Each structure stands twice: as structure tokens, then as C-alpha cells.
Image (cartoon, rainbow, N blue to C red; front, side):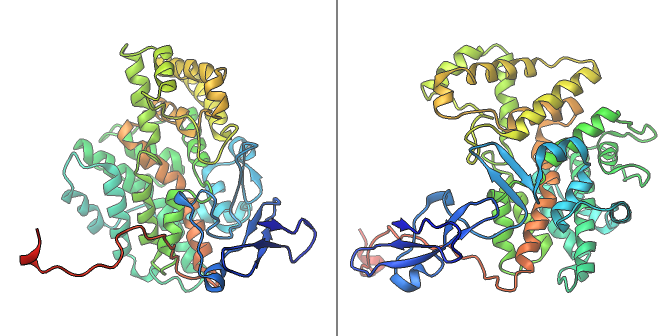
Length: 437
């Protein structure tokens, strides 16, 4: 394949030569940050060929204005804003607004969004009784996905979003109710009474109140804990076309409603290779802390491919994950503010030190990712391990909503439909049952 190298040309093309076919000229698109992509959308109709890219590692499935990542340089930006600036200066609600609507909110817009979140924080009492159908040991992620879908039954007017006003209302309901559902799921799993949201509290403070308050004993999180939770949610708010976001877009492309599409995203996030990875990090650190293995032994086993080191490496980042650097600093500050020490943090830092100085890890570009320190942060706040992925889902909700809306409002949108290369048996005759050996 040869490419027209004139970057300034508005009609760049790539020339593709295929066996038995005339050369094909394919358009080259250039993104805002000078990313180059060969447009193969008409390749099959022109040649009969498709491309094969297992896991979509080199396939652009859409054009998007939401998030930009440069994995080689460790860059993450939302709508042009660097993640470092957002983490240092905004709240989760401001970040959510910006992701969904494209710009940081004015004071009036932020106040309106906060009012809507407070207005929609309660669950319909009929919906609340759905929790009684889950066993006490049910996983909170199963409850979260099911309850988001069930929630749509109580708001049928939002299944067909005819204008921006209805979308704004649906957005507020999802963002607000997801934390209520999550907290109720946690309480249900422990057999504890439900704690209703308090309209006087902020978004993150309210969630911790619903999680940990007892009847007549309201839980009062510290300012540091509330800030740490907000930071966690900001760092998970969106991350380009990951598995769960791509799932939301895939489902949304069929014109499925926002609730159904987001519920599908929750299911995709549940997997240990995606949202469940920070749980595996904590399990790994706890095993080392229990004395089963030393840090050096773990590292040697990793080199021999006898041990899977959770929390290192990333599908996109080949230098460092900027979110991991922010979380590492946040964990230190939170533990210092609480006046506690966590032996898992010490082990994590030992692992990071070894990995960032060892040629084996450096050659393979295995650096700590966002999951490596996020579990320790949640643990310091008091969030139990089985809720880690639920926390990820709450944080990722704005990104899912923004991506769904991008698909929804695209006038040229088509239902997503990947192709495949068939490798099964060729055509063969049907064998009647009595003749089969």
C-alpha cells in the first residue's frame, strides 16, 4: 500500500493493490490531532475484500468529538481538556456536563444540572421493591444492569428522545439514579435497610451517605474522602472506544433507547479484563501481603509467564497511563489525611519500582495502569471490593451517555455490523439421524 504524503491535500488517498484486482484508491482521513485513517467503508463493494483485525486493535469504528488518546505519549483529553487539568480543577458533575454537552458549564448551567440531579435522585417505590427479587448474595453489577433496564419501564416518556429537553431529563435521571441503584444494591447484598438520598448533600457525599449510613446514625464522609471519590469518577468518566463504550454505541446504533444501551455497557464492563481488573489487583496484593509470595518472586514468575500481573500494561498506552500517576498521588494524600497506612500500597509501590526499572517490563512497555491504584483508593474510602466495578460504572456513565448521543443524533448513522472471515466447514450434505455414526 502506498499513501499520498501531501498532508495538506484535502483529497489524500491510499493506493491498495489486491490479487487479481485493479489498484483501488481509498480516501485518507486526518483527525484534529493529525491522526491518519484509511477509509475502507467502500472496500467490500468495490473489491469483494474486507479487512481482518481481531479485537479491532487497528480499526476505527466511528468519528467522535469526545475523547482523544495518544497512547505513545500518555495523553488523555476530553473535548480538548487535559485529564490532568480536569482532575485538579473540576468536580465530577462539571466533567460529566462537559463530556455530554461539549463545553464546561457556566455557573447557571451547573446549578441547573445539580437541581435536576437532586430532583431525580429518588427511585420509584415500585422500582425499589424490585430489589426484593434478588438474593442477598447477588452481585451488585447484575443488579445494576437489571435495575437500569427496569428503570426505563417507569419512564416510558424518555424511551423516544424527540428533543434536547427530553435528552437532558433522561441524562439527569440516569446520572442521578445510577448512584441510588448502586447504593441500594450494596445495602441489599448485606441485608441492610435502604438509606434514601439526602437532597442537601452533593453528588459524591450523597452516595457515601446512602452506602454507609445507619438508621438514626447518618454517615458523614470527610472532605478528603468526597474529593477522592469525585477524582476517581472523573478519571473513569470516558476513555474513547473501549469495550463497554463500543458496546453502548453498538447497541445504540440499532436505535435502542438510552437505558437499554447503557445497561449493555454495564454488562460489558463487568468482565475482569475491563472494569473488574482493579478487583484482581487487590486480590493479587492481598496474596502477596499474606506471605504467599514476595514481590521478587512474583516478578520472576511473571517473567516466566507463570503469573499474570494485574494492573500493568494497557491496550492503548505504551508509555504510561496518565490516570495512574494522578491516582498514585491521590492515594498518598488520602491515606495521609486519614492518618492510616495500607500495607497494600507499600507492596504496590514495590511492584511499580521493580517493574519500572526492570528491562523485561521496560521492553514490553508494561507500566501501571489506572486499575493498579484505583482499588487502593476505593479501599481507603471504605468501598468493598465487590463494589469496585460498580464504582467504575458510575464514573463511566457520562462517557456512555455522550457516546450514545453522538450515535443517536448522527443523520447518516447506520446500524453497526462487523464482517467476519468464515473458517468453518465448506458446504456438505445433510445426514439423516438414522445414518449418523
